Length: 189
Image 1 (cartoon, rainbow, N blue to C red):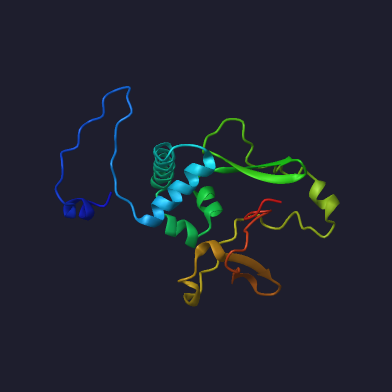
Image 2 (cartoon, rainbow, N blue to C red; image 1 turned 90 degrees about the horizontal axis):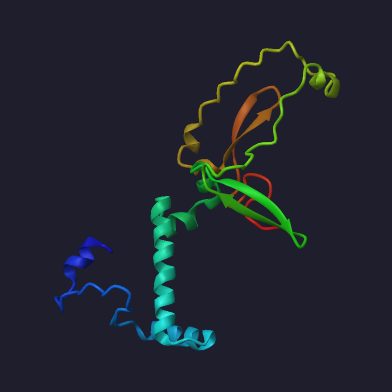
């Protein structure tokens, strides 16, 4: 809860700690549109207003805990790319197909048994056999990234990528907002 809001709250009865093992009463006032929505959901789910309200509060608290753990607010998630945020936090996507539809699940960092890459290094001579023009004697130094042009400084880094331009080398480019950055991201196929 916002500390400023807590300071402005009107004085009321002191809060009592709930008794262990029992359901504790909670009185609250809500706007009419919220009450109508709770009534509608309770009727549709065949449960009481109280049970529906408790379920919605639990769901809201669970979402709040996830957002706090991620260090993001809902607005930040809506503005950015959630999948890139998960990747930066070390989560690994797991792709699976069920009933002809591709699904993506996210494994927490350090989850056992997740292979993060299927990459295998080329065996000696294998690359030359596959690509006869390949120069095996060329230096294999790591190429230093070109500096980011000043006009691109304010662009979301998740949209930036490098492209090899013949005769010029690596050049920074900007992807369209909302473009997935790798295979199938952003949608379930």
